[in-house]
Length: 271
Ligand SMILES: NC(=O)c1ccc[n+]([C@@H]2O[C@H](COP(=O)([O-])OP(=O)(O)OC[C@H]3O[C@@H](n4cnc5c(N)ncnc54)[C@H](OP(=O)(O)O)[C@@H]3O)[C@@H](O)[C@H]2O)c1
Image (cartoon, rainbow, N blue to C red; front, side, top):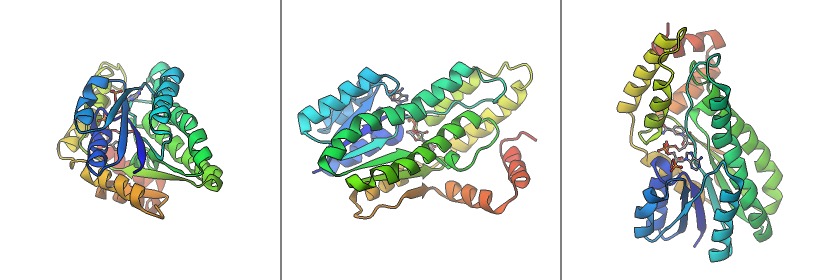
């Protein structure tokens, strides 16, 4: 059975994927900063590793523990991430850098630690959690969407670079699904609500965003796609998940940039 490392397994997609894959008999290592939030994975027969994807030592130690215990890592699911929404102009650059440190460099840091083992075994799979925001940017999402655009570009490069070693790279582009994602995003938005110039727009965005997530579907479709990518002999390069993701990406292709801007401004009550 395959050995799978899932980052961001203390919540949301990562936790649910870990549970489903443990139940299917895979050897699953969940990784996150909040190790206490992964006891349920251990109780099910999985493993929990304390890992901060922004920290070199933490990532190296986590990966070393898995290869020592199992002798291999077959699948890496780079799932850890969050959204730093806000106005491009007034977002503190330290917050912007933190967004990239987790969503982009964190993903690359874990991949760099795992790839030498996959190259040695001449097989493996890396599944990167992008987003509909990896294809479509919109107001307040400049930093988050650009981090996911970066995930898309890095994945496309990496896919071709490691193909000769029998390693597959897959991108997953979910739309809106109810996880812990919106709580983290809203916490960050609330810190920005006193912005003197854009405060009202930020509040309006936050309200529309919260409404969207109140109605959002539960994350099973994303977990099923992750399992499909792992079990498929020929996984697709990209999996869009959710009607909203498919619609937004299609509309972005069909509409002019200005028309698409208007749709997004309306959607988030920013007109
Ligand atoms: N839910 C959606 O609607 C949606 C849509 C498109 C894409 N996504 C993407 O899906 C991925 C998973 O998000 P989710 O929806 O499942 O959100 P979530 O419930 O908030 O889970 C995020 C996970 O990332 C982990 N994480 C955050 N910072 C980390 C760090 N520095 N080091 C290690 N782990 C870290 C968190 O664990 P700790 O805090 O314990 O470290 C948590 O387990 C993200 O990449 C997100 O951008 C989500």
